[in-house]
Length: 384
Image 1: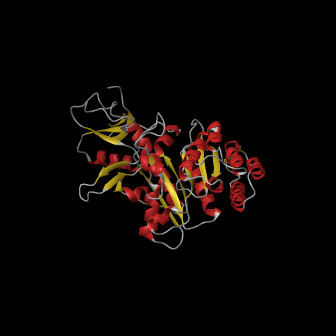
Image 2: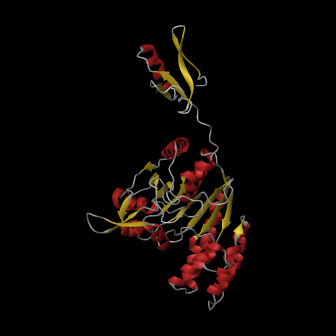
Image 3: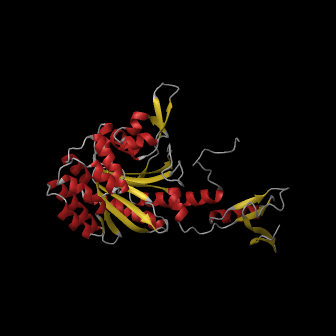
C-alpha cells in the first residue's frame, strides 16, 4: 500500500503540528533571550564528519547512503550536537564564549524505545568556550526553564560524572571491548553481569565499579561515594564538582546517579538527565563534552543539552486551539478591514469559498463575520 509509512515514522497532523510549532517558537525565543544564536546544520553530511569522535552507538543509529556526486558514504544526522560542535570549531572560530541553539528533525535507524519515533524533532542548546562550572550551571538552569515554559516542570534532574567511570576503568586496566561491555551493564544496573565482567579485576577498582549502580539518591550519595571509592585525585575532583554544582542549583530538584552514563562516548565530565511528571523516561539529556571539537581541528570546552520536542509537546498542558473565523467571500472594503484587524490580533480568518457550505466547522471554524447594522461583527458559527 503506497500510503503506509515505515515503522516508527509518522505524519504530524494539523492539531499536533500547530502545538509543536507554537512550542518551538516559544522555546527558541527563550534561547534567543539568553544569547543563544540559532544554527541550521544540513540534514546530510559525509559519514566521517557526522560520527567522528562520537562513538559506536551513534554510528549504529545513523542511516547511511552513497553520494551520487562524489561516491563517498554519507549519513543522515542522528544527533545534531556533533554538527554544532563542527560549526563552532571549524566555521565560527570565535575566541570567547559562543552560545548556539537548534531545532530540526534527526533520523534513527532504530527507535530508542518500543513507542518512540525514529524521527525525533531535536531541540537543544550548546555553550562553548568556558570550562568552569558556571557554564554547566547556566545550561542546566536553561533546561529547567525550557521545561517550565512547556508546562512540564522538571520533577528530577539526575547528575552524574563520566570522569568517575573513565578513571575507574583506566585504573582497572580494561581493554576497550571490555570497557564497552561494562558501560552497557552499568546502564542496565546489571550487578550479576558486572560481577562476571569484572572477574579478574583487582580491588579496589573492582569493588569501586561494582559500587556505582548503588550510588544514586540525594546529596548524601556524594558522601557515600567518597567513602566507598578509592582515594584518587581525579575521583575527589569529580565528586567536588558535583557537590559544587548541587549547591549552586539548590533551587532545582537535583539528585545523583553515578552509574547513569548516557552519552558516555563523547561526554567528558558532568552529565545530567531531566525527568518530568508523567514520563518514566528522561525527557532531556546533556552534559560536558570538552573533547568533541578536537575532531574538527579545534577542541573547546563545551556543555549543552538536547531533547525531543515531540515527546515534550505530548506532555505539555496545551490550551485547546481557538477556532477560526469564517469570512464571506465578498468584495467589501469594510470587510477587508475587519479581516485585517482580526488577523493582526492573532485570529485565524478563513474565506468561505463558494460551493462548500456545511463544511466549515470541519475545517476548524467556530465563529463567523456577519454584517449587523452596517458593521461587520464576529458571531458564533451556527451548525451547518
